[in-house]
Structure formats: structure tokens, C-alpha cells
Length: 377
Image 1 (tube, one colour):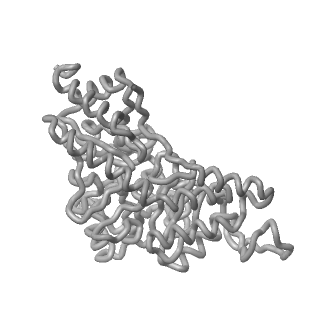
Image 2: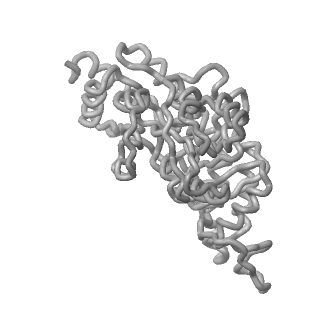
Image 3: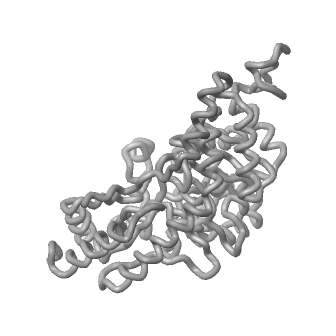
């Protein structure tokens, strides 16, 4: 049996959504479905505004620009994240300042955030690791106490909640990603959500060349004005239509992931030597990733190789960003003990909505075999 790290859940409604736009023969890049998609995201998340982008990374870049961060400004980020979070401040010559994580949710440690703050700190940008909400309430308190901007990188956590409140609505703004391995997908894509009308208006400009547009540019005859330096970060109509179809079933997709994770948690928790990551009380995790923590780096690497031999894909999410060459070249030479420790022991297993019992049992039984002497020793 071969089990990939992820598979995309799709159905006939997704095909019809894409086919409808193609067959229209018009406005593949600028149709009404884009605004409809934005409205549906806002309604689901509980934000006033949403702007969709061609990727979550573009959405992060846009926020760096519209907040007018500049050289000398510091933005506190985790090193335990995908590279897009860490490098976003560099796009505007601001400085990413790495803070350590805590072991319960693998998100930014509020205590270390306080330690890393200076008079140059302008923002805090946490992630919600693999669909697990971070200590966002505590980070929000810090941001409010010190008058800092709080940007949630919720790329991996669409639909996750703390006390029934959606992640993405705690901060001043948040991004999400619709990449192929996310909770729902358009292949590539992303968005920013916010309750700030001024921020929303700036985002609408920057996403499309800084152009003032009250209607479809390709449809009207009026003279267009360009009032800012923008980009072509637009999401196409085809992908927006697909996004609407995927979003319509996102609760089903989340429930399927959670059911799979519950089964894995129950069975893997029985194996000595495995730490299963479980959400704190009143935390609703969506399991974009399913990761376990092993006792040490040697066992982790041996298990990873053993699973590969047995046809089970795994990956290390994440290697510490501060150890990448790009940051070494920039002069970063820091220690983040918890980040480095967790990263050396973590292993991400396959997770997708439509995993069947045979696949789940094969993963569980293969890991059991390993710990019963397959390669561990």
C-alpha cells in the first residue's frame, strides 16, 4: 500500500464550477464570482471584509505593504513555520525577529514574545500550526497592551476556533491559504480578512495595480485612474468559482479530518515513545497537518525512513527558518531551544479528508511494527 502525505478531495460540483466559467467564454480573470467568493469567506469567518489573492504569500506581502512597515521596523514571527511567514517582513525591508514556541500548541510562546520586544517592534505575526490554534488570546492581550499590530497567519487553520471564535478574527487582520494541501483548495490562492475598512480599501487597490475600479475593468469604457503602486495579485474567476464550491463543503471536510485525527490519536496514544499533539480545552483544531513528536532525533529519522520503505509518505513540518541559508546570509545566529528541540523530533504523517480505515490502520500498524522492533534499536 502507498499512502501520500495529502490528497485533494473533489467532487462533481467542483468540476461543474470550473466548467461553468470556461464555457461562459468571458471574464475568466475578472468575473462576479470573485466578489461572491470574498463575501462567502467573510460570512464564514465572521469578518467584515475579505480580499482574495493568487496565493497566501501574496496576501502576506500585501499586508506588509499596506501597513507601511519599513526599514528598521521589527515584526515578531515564529521560526517554526513555513518560510513565507518568516520572509514576509523582508519584502519591505523590515526585520523578522524570531521568538520561540511553546510545546502545547507549537505556536508562538507569549512569554518569549515579550522577551523579544523592543522599541522597534511594530507587529506580532503568529501562525496556527497545522490547524491548531496558537495561544492567540494571550498574544492579542500583548498586542493591545503594547499598541502593536496583530497579524494572524492562518494559512493552515481555516475553520479552527478558540472558544467558538474563528481564528483569523482575533487579530487586526489575518491571511489564509488555499494551496493544494490546505483545508479547502483552489490549487493556489489566498486571502486577507479584516474588520478595518481603511485596510480593506488599500488591499483592494494593491491587489490589482493600484487601480480604482467600481466595475469590471474589461467590461467598462470609462477612464481608469491608478492611485497607488500595486501588483497583479488577482485570483482568477475560474479559481474563485472552484473556491466557492470547495467552501460550500468545508464543514464536511473539517469533520472528516477531525474524525481521522481522533482515530489516529486514540491508537497512536497507546504506543510508548509517541507524543500525540492534542488541543487544549475549548480549542477546535482542523488538522491540516497531523504531526507526532518522537523521543529523540534518531528515532524520528529511523521511523521516517521505515515508513518510506513501507510506502507511507512523511515530512518534517517544520525545519527552523532561522537555520536556513537565507537567514544565515543575513547574519542571523540565534538559539531557539524549544523550536530546535521540537523540530528535531517532529514528524508529519499523511492526513486528508477521505482517508479510509485501511489506510489509517496501515499507518498505525506500521508504526507499531517499528516500535516492536522493525527498525528501532
